[in-house]
Length: 207
Image (cartoon, helix red, strand yellow):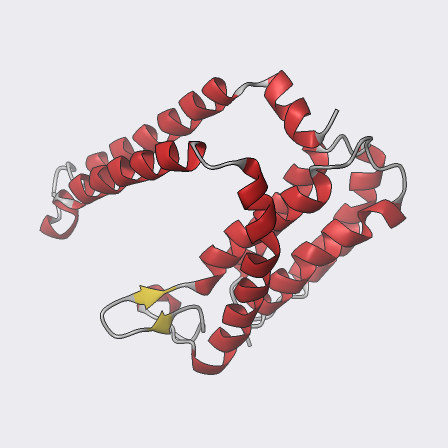
C-alpha cells in the first residue's frame, strides 16, 4: 500500500476537505473578532471580508485542482522544486524585508506585487516529498532510507535560515516530520532525527 493509499484509507478525501474548510472558517472568524473589540481599529475592521474572499477563491481553486490527475503533480514536482530553490537563492541577493520583518530578505519586489518565494518553496517541497515517498511500498527501517527526504527538506530550509527566517524554517521541519509520520516511519527513527534538527534550529542567529 502506497503512502497516498494509506492516507485515503485512514481519513478519506471528504474528511480532509471538511477539516481544512473548518480550519479556514475558524481563521476568518478570528480575523473578524479582531476587528470587533471594545476599541475597534478601522485598519482591521474590513480585513475579514478580504479573508473571506480569499477563502472563496481558494475553494474554487481547490475544486479545480481535484480534477487534475495525480500524474501531473508527480511530473511537476521536480521542476517546481528546482524553481523554488532558485527563487530562494535569488531572494538572498535581491530580497527585501517589510513591516515587522525589516532586515529579513524574505520578499521580492515585482512592482505592483510582493512575492515571498519561501511560500512557493514550501508547496514545491511537499510535492517533491510526495513524489519520492508516495511510492514507498513499506515504511523506512533505517536512517539511510531517510537520507533523501531529509536532504530534500534541509536544502530549502537552509536557504530560508540564511534570510534569516526562523518561523518559516520551522514550517519545513514540521513538513518533514509530518511526511515521515504518514509514511509509517518508526517513532524511534524519527526521534533520532529530532536532536540534529533541533540543534540546527537552535544554532539560528539573526545576526
